[in-house]
Image (cartoon, rainbow, N blue to C red; front, side):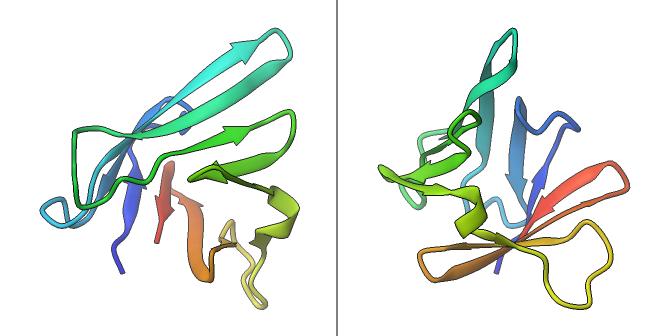
Length: 110
């Protein structure tokens, strides 16, 4: 399993870099905003990479993630693993688990 590091503290507008750049794509997040806050965050490959074509978006108002045209509410995807007392969260998508952690001003996903 590869680990992705969100390069900037502002993960809504950032580069997302894999620990194995020769095997996995890097991504960029971009967020549109309104006076009330973030509206839509999009996830796009940083370069034209044929090995990994995942595209997605976060709809902040609807509180959904969409990947490949499938939208799912956050509450149906997110959990806090038992016994974990830090910022780690576990997310589930199409039968896969992803761990998201914020530590020392760095976001990581694995």
